[in-house]
Length: 92
Image 1 (cartoon, one colour):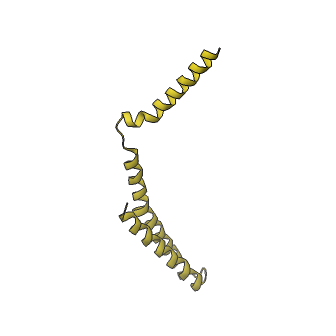
Image 2 (cartoon, one colour):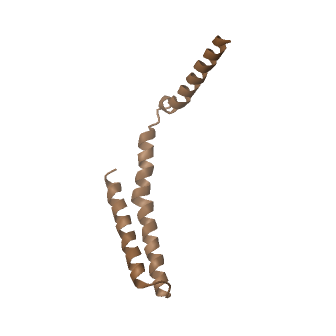
Image 3 (tube, one colour):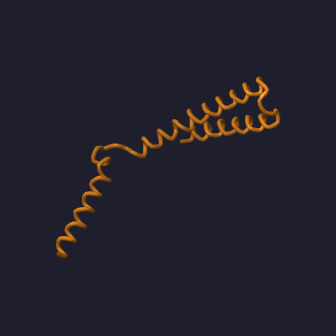
């Protein structure tokens, strides 16, 4: 009975190790692809979303929705976030 439990543990450990090592067997560089996806988000999607949000704030002000002082603070924050994320993305 003890031999069966030890064999089951060893087999489970071997299968888990094989599953975790399968990208290495396929020669897939997961770190590079992960950083590429992160760079895409930081350099493309976050500045684009911030720009669209600033446009929406401007349209809201044109149609009389909201106050100017709050809109300026939010728009300035979005400009800083979009610019900072793009600059950080250049160093990745």
